[in-house]
Image 1 (cartoon, rainbow over the protein chains, first blue to last red):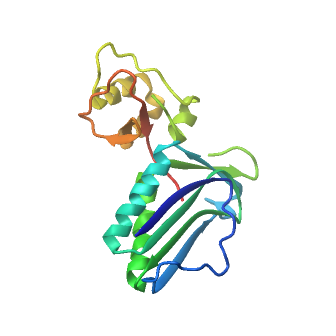
Image 2 (image 1 turned 90 degrees about the vertical axis):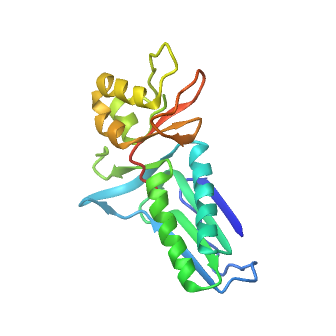
Length: 134
Length: 77
């Protein structure tokens, strides 16, 4: 089982167009990307500012990835999450999961994101086109 | 005590002092802050606390030098 969690300053760089899956047990690979939408509650958005509890956020992401990978029998689970400002249209979260089969890959991504939004100490603040935040 | 997200924005600070003479429990900290910092009432009621970067329950006792944080309404992703 190969697991990693990385917090990156600013938008996440584009993923490799044709990644190489080193784990020979991989039969299904799934990449989820979270993108900053142009509107939030009907208001035009410029960006999202992500705030992370330094240290704890990274560790919680890694612990959660390990737990989810073990639970779903995942071959590899890699997480990248932004910190700081991410403009509209750019990527702030990437989850790459490699599994033997499709169902466990999809289940792992879904559960990971649900749990992350509940447990990992990262906050986002909307930066609106008209200035200010809610 | 460290503050993040909505709690930090509402109070306009990233930390507040906790005036306890004896080592308090998390429950005591929560109760005291509900009186002293009513602006973050929702965050105190719904939020969790971390001590030394680990989530703890209300029975946990905080010692001198521990890093305490209010973790409320996380919104990553």
